[in-house]
Amino acid sequence: MNPGASTATIADLIPGVQLALQNRTDILSYNPQKYIRDAIQELTLSNPFEELRQTGPMKQLTVGQFQYPVSFFLNPGDDYSQVQALSIFTNPNTNTVAYPMKYDTPAAMQTLVYIPGGLPAKWTRFGTNIWVGPQPNQTYTAFMNYQRRHPFPSGATGANLNSAPVYMPVEWLEIVEYCAAYRLAAGPLRWMDEAKDLRTLLYGDPAADDRMANLGLIKARFYQQQMDARIHSRQLTPVTGNR
Image 1 (cartoon, rainbow, N blue to C red):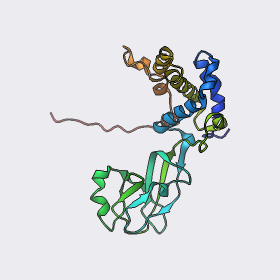
Image 2 (cartoon, rainbow, N blue to C red):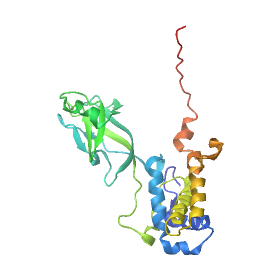
Image 3 (cartoon, rainbow, N blue to C red):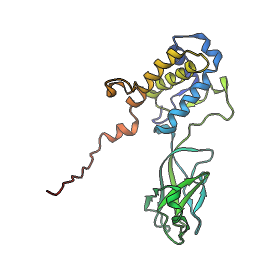
């Protein structure tokens, strides 16, 4: 298995969902594939997973144009959930020095995008477009590092989802199973006591006295990025006040 590659399919997770619901056999008639898909979509929307991280194509910006379709910076067929960096090469002749543009809000970008003749330093998203500002005065090359939305076969439902890969590390598959079980219990099974217990298991108990001991499985689980960062030293800037 290659690092960062797919580790399982939706069909592989159905037995775990069934066990989380006290091994009820009737869940197979409630389309558990749908609830597994919904759980995967929620978890991968805001949490970072190496299996979904991509680098988009190198794209030349147009002189005087500040607005570009989101798809302009993405690989074919992708949509993104998180932008890790939208970078621009500052030396268009050789493209050897790249800097990430800073994100700003659409309101803050209103004046910047109409300034002609500069090196774009900021970006924002508005609808289906990405704005950069100021307007490029040369054909700078830009590219995006992003986490794509979890892909599923187009139009697939029910058993047609069984072979769909799950682009998450193996340590997170248990959480997907519990998330799907929670959705089934709170939805078609109308099993509210079980749903409450599963939600607490996943998200923790906000009413508990010891919050740190009751984070829930999701907040307590580490990401690869967090584990990689452990080996790096961090710089602290001391601040002293006047006496």
